Each structure stands twice: as C-alpha cells, then as structure tokens.
Length: 431
Image 1 (spheres, rainbow, N blue to C red):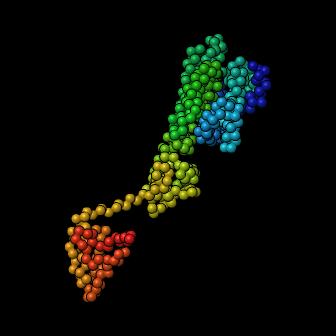
Image 2 (cartoon, rainbow, N blue to C red):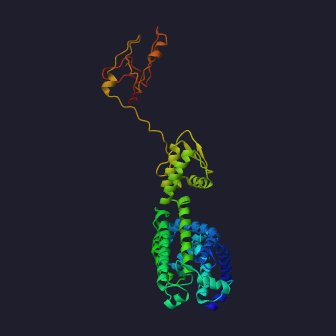
Image 3 (tube, rainbow, N blue to C red):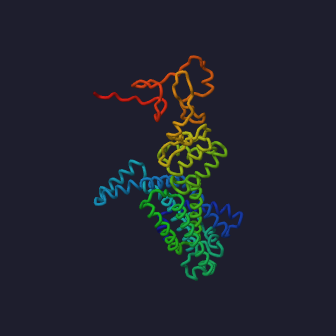
C-alpha cells in the first residue's frame, strides 16, 4: 500500500497539505487532538473541492438536458439500424457531433472528484496504520490517531477487528454503530438526490430508455454505497456523506431556480414566476429575464407550462418581450393548446334569424308612391329601415323612396305572400 501511495504522491501530498492547513485553524479553536478539528478539516476539504467543481457541475446539467433532448432521435437511430451495430454507432457519433453533446459530460464531477477521494482514502489509511504520508509528520500523525468522531476513531472501519479498534483507543461497538449510521445516511442521501432528479426535474412528456436507466441507478447507487461503505474509514465516510449532502442541496437549488423544460419543477417555477411578475409588473432578477427570454424565443415550440405562463401574463395585461423583459400591453393575445395565437375577446354571435311570420307581420307605412314597406323594430340589428330621426330630418313634400332596381325590373307593389324588399333578379329564360 505504501508503494501505491508513493506512486500517487502528486495527489496525496496536496490533499494532506490542505487538511493540515484547515486543522491548524480548527485546532486553535477546538483543540489540536479533537475529532472536531480533524472532522471539520475533512468537511472543509469537501467544500473547497466542490466549489472548484461548480463549473463542471454546470456542464453536467447542460449535458444531461442535451442528452434528454436527443433521446427521441437516438431511439429512431437504434430502431433504424438495430441489425447493424457499426452503422448505429457511427450515426450516434454523428448526432453527438452535430449537436455538440458528450455523453461523458454528465459524469465529469464524479470523475474529477475521484482523485481527491482516492488521495483522502490513502491519507486516512496511512493514519490507521501509523505511517506518515504527504506533509503529515509524526506529531500530526499522533494527533490524528487520538481524534474521535462521536466515539469512533478517524481511521477506524466497520470491518476492523476488536484488537485494531482497541489500538486506536475505542470500542468495537462504538465504531460499528457510528459507521453503520453514517453508511445509512450516506445511502439515503444518495437515494433522495437521485429520486429528486427523477420525480421533479425530468421531462415527463418524453418516455425514453434514458429515464429507465436513471431509475435503475436510483436504486443501484445506494446499494453500492452500502456495500463499499463498510470498508471505508470513518474519515472517508465523513467525506462522502458531506459531498452527498452538498450535491443534494446544490441540486435542490438548481431544480428550484433552473428546472428542466417540461418537468414538474418547471410548472412550479413558472407558477411562482407568474405571481412575482404580475405583482411587480416586471422581471426583476437576471435569472428571471433569462427564463422569459428562452420561453419567448421558442415561439410555437413552447410546452404546456410555458403557454400557460404566456397566457397568464396576457390576461394580466402584460406582454413578454424577446429580451426577457415584461411590458404592459393594452390587449391580451392568448395562445391555443397547439401554440397558435388566439384572441382573448369573446366570439361574435350571429343575429337570430327571423321567422316568416315576423318578416311579414309588420305595419305598413303609407307613402305617396304607394309602395309597401315594413316598419322595422328599433332593436333589430338586421333592419333595413331608417331610424325615425333620420326620416324626420329629410323633407317629406314630394319625396319618393328610390326602389332598388333588379335585373328584371322592380315591381311597384309586392304581391301577397311574397317577401317585401329587394327581390333576387330572375335569370333570363332560354328560348
């Protein structure tokens, strides 16, 4: 083991140096030989590493969403070339190249964190065996061996024998109880993190093998942590539990503020954003403008939750702009379910059709020309008669109403049983 540690000294030396620096700070507060000083040093190492890995975490989110978007296309390629594996692989690589995605990007944080985990394991194992490593000298080694976390030595394992544990100044029962609790918490946090991703931040409109794979990993990872955790020192369990809690909190923040389109988390986020924007009348934060800008840019490709958001703004008299801002609008333009623009105004109703008796049963007005006309109802929108005000304003003496000319000549008097008013011209008879 010393040979392997010496080969990877370029990793173990920086890790041990960081732990010693944090131990110097916490040792001055809690005491150099306490479990608080060494335990918090390991926790601080995790936080420092995870802060440095935030850019990779952002890439992981983008890569995961890109892979989710490509799942339908990947499924088509698999069905089209299911008998030709080589051609299938070539088409997959071509698809990745065209879209600029990389399947390994989703594993970048884990791969980048693995060397630090490996180095910490060897540092703690050297402490358990009483060997100096990196910048940890004899005095620091003796201090680390005295450190206990809730009664369990920093370098003790669940599988250690009673003699090994007694050499570290602890009882076997305390070590196994503490390690068992930490393994359960580590597995539970990993399960909750993966379940949170699957239930809240996955596009539910796309059913692909990728989702089935993620569901399988939701159960496989906790079992793996439980199996391998019994061989980890207490200090490594502290490291892994801390990084799981960090990942869970980081993911909760991302799901709440930057959810996957089409997911339940997006529906909840857009509901909160609708209330916020309609209350203030504008988008106040930069993240809100980014989300609104992306929704506007989609146009007719918006999903159900995004269309509801746009319609809610329109009903409130607001309009989302291409730059992510929101302005007050006079008219509300709603979107239909298929993404086509609709209108918020009610549909125009057609006037009721009058019966034959209503059309023929009006009082006749006497005129100099003797032409029969119906007295129109003032409230009827289909009346062809003029209003009383308009008739009184014109001179009555010697005035005659002009009869509409038809193709075959207008009749001076309507026959009994015929419709009053202009008649349809008769078609000329063929001789």
